[in-house]
Image (cartoon, rainbow, N blue to C red; front, side, top):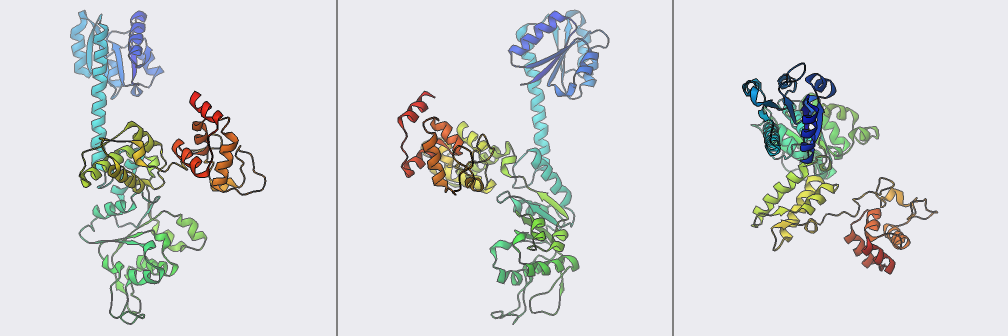
Length: 471
């Protein structure tokens, strides 16, 4: 709802204008003079100021400078139209003659607010385009902040630690850091530390000499040396064995690498970008990650926000993925239904963008005889999604199961399985709750509730069915 401030000294006109605008779904505030308007309100908080030209004390045109970017619409009588033209030259967005027609006023207000919002949206789009990172979609505040930090740190040689949940796009950030650096004419070597067995990780990273171990028939350059002059991206660095961590620390401190079985070291110029979803500080305190290496790589830390914290970005990403998969599978362009949008916005997305990609790809493949993606095609696993209204956490949370009874009170001494808990809760509450209430309390969808009833052989009682139909 757009906010409008009316500045008019004649009470009858001011009240009539307020009622007119409120009927047209505007939020209206009012003041009889410039002095009261500036002392009572923050002018920049309004979408439009409608002011009389002649006011007691300062004229309405003084509001033009005081309002900043907020547009000012001047009202004036026929006798002072010349002054109205002058006010336009001073920066008023428009003027309207008194006595004004109601439709004329409403149309003028809609026109001015519409232009202002369009201009603001274009400005935001320009800023977003200038700061965006290739391959990354999002204009939310958290993403804009991330883009700015990437632009600042990329041209430097500082070591960067990227932290974020799985599926948030850590490698995209690493790639952006490389592409915007002065090393972009050299290679960026990406290594997933969790994907290489512990027995091979050192030889892969640092190379080896012929005869260093059984099977080492030739000399082999490691990935660190291959990244000389460029960027080394170590994904999931928290999975790196302690022995390999010691060797990596030497690379960072001394700028040299020594292959396995060699007595000589080689100088390398490598910028390290590391990524993890784990708490390295906690791991270092537990002795699972070298503390000196942690402090060495934690020069600049970039935090990637999870998808659930990115607001409207989720829909923009989903629509972009929808276009991609429609083109990939040779289908006509599909769109998201309102139900699908609601489901996407309300879901927690523990797998983040990677999970969203899977959901959109699945929906495009399964969509038939429709130009719209419905909620059911997304097949989002909402079994553990919703939160219990009373506790603020899922009633299926394993840590709470051993100490909760279906009614919310502590259980006697038994540890219930999820299925036992589900069955007991439904049997004890189905006579007093509708299916919708049962599903909400259990943190599942109505469809999931029905499917579990079928699997566990829990029929709906007549009283439950009747209660559900009434509600």
